[in-house]
Length: 245
Image 1: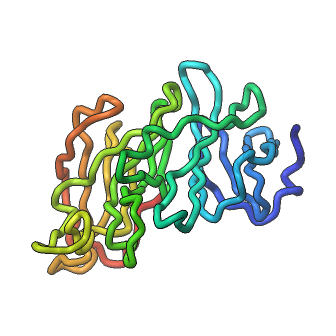
Image 2: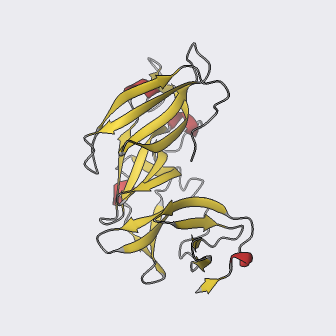
């Protein structure tokens, strides 16, 4: 059903596609908004438990010619010493309903993949900055998380992932952590479009120059695999704190 813009309070923008914006108001409901005609659609309640963590993506499925919202719910805790994998459901505008899908592509025998910060939609694929984490719970969970790009094919409804460029990671030899990673070299990461290609934008917090920014382009990307090439570096940019969204 459609309701007026005045009925949505304090919304935040989650994503946009073809002029339609996905909003998250103060309540648990999600909203699709078409600013051109000043109408919004309140999505039905999710069928998943009201877990603490939730990542959302929004885009267009060119195969079914339908707009979809993906919701990845994560239980922020452990069960019998194990971190449970996320659960995923998809909202389709054509049916105005949610359905849960298999999450096989978000876990291995020993690890889980967690989409975290939704970045953008482009050509049938949603992109998040996320991480991989062992299922076995440990005392310092943040140290066990390996950051990466996680993406979702809206047509095939399958998640995939690709690591950041090797230069993003600084490893500590002899570390007891699962990935032997002490910290990420770059922060304030954004996935952006650069001349029609997927790219990463961020700054090196350990550079000799303050706020040293760089851009890496994802070459030969076929929807599942690709390789990163450093395109350029900004050193320094005074007063520039983050990429425009």
